[in-house]
Image (cartoon, rainbow, N blue to C red; front, side, top):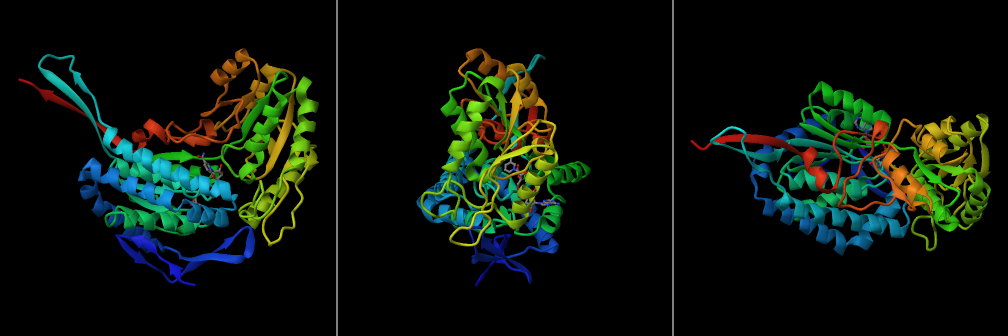
Length: 476
Ligand code: NAD
């Protein structure tokens, strides 16, 4: 099998070490072999990005816009092939894999427009004979570090604005999902990416990721809280700008007056689709007393209809989890829950599929909000129901968490929906919708332990990827 190289200063380069990427739906199916970047190569990539910066920052916005649009068009043209690659590599259903590639294309298309739209203000000074202009300049060399669970969409929502606003990039995708990252960089390169403007460094977090926090002007990271905190510490020590999107423990509140079918679909989608491996997944289902039994019964019935199996098989709802470590972690949380007094209501069993992989039935536990299963991110097809006496207690429980990414409420009451939207402490909130599932043209991010730094996506993306300048001009 040919080893796929990394991209440094416009050249495809290998090293002596590589990793084999395997399909989590079929452990006997290798996907590809990828060269592992060395710390020296990280240094070369950062230096190349630094050299490429002045020319890229000085290109016309049309040049940057064209690159992003051509990338979007190729992604759309190849959505089935690349979507199936995402499914094979990350364990998503075919629809989710293709949907993610389409989403990446939409994001590049959006930032193709943003490249020519952004600007500054022209203001009168409060002093006579002076004018003021504000403008935005690229922040510089940006380190982009991404997780495996949205391997092309997250790369797109970081690379898109980085390039649109004139920055150069060193990009480290997750070592779990190098294949789609490699294809994306190949597409950018063939569509006119100048040497050094984006450098691809596939490698282990502890080696490449760590080295990537040195010598750059900004770091944008999506991943776990543990790694995010480490990166933040190093970024501050180096005075680099930092943006972190991390975990969640997202609550979905279901009130007595909810439409039962809507609540059940929101819970199934938010908790179990994409094998629960979404930072916006609903892991805490907070249900008020009068609907609790009916809701749990209906959810258990609906869960029985969910089909778990290899990601590209027809008719499946839930693919595998990403790897053995993650499977062990989820199974471990079921035991932790039981030991703390939670009840396993359904699921959790390993599934024997046609091919060997990391399959488990979605698990539902009943517990209280103080249990570890409701405090720590599990990141899998696993949710917990928590009983609340009324809306006020449900809101208090929803906010009783160290996280604050997404949240949701199912209710037919305008009063409670409005109050929840205004008082829940999360960056995203949903009314009668699953906590996961977002648009690409609006800001994305959380609060508390879930996020740090400026928002990603939409019009707000410009804030992280540019530095503002205020110019005073004398008219005298
Ligand atoms: P992870 O933190 O293990 O890895 C993320 C990236 O960081 C990978 O590229 C990894 O190689 C790299 N890395 C690991 N150690 C590093 C180090 N010491 N220094 C620098 N980089 C390092 O996360 P994961 O398992 O890939 O992804 C799952 C996590 O991502 C979950 O916690 C999930 O909630 C979170 N996530 C958050 C969002 C969001 O927008 N809030 C979106 C998707 C995923």
